[in-house]
Image (cartoon, rainbow, N blue to C red):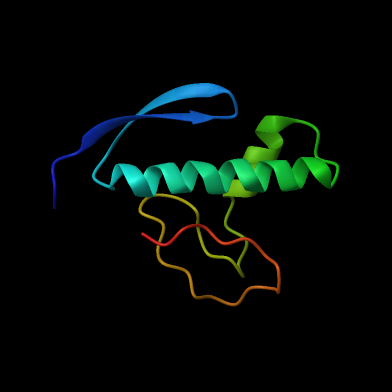
Length: 87
């Protein structure tokens, strides 16, 4: 395993400093995925950004968890359903 690195990400207008062993590119793709899901949820009527973020990062059974290292998901998903980026 590699040494944890620090990376700054912007998520929902907030700058976050994260320490992770994951690559910076992967973390940026993950942040983009979450931003896109939050935007999709807002368009469908979820107005609170934190609620949308919670829903976007939650583990619906068909999508797999969006936490930690984000396991590569080739799980059952509906057509058009967003998936987190593979690590």
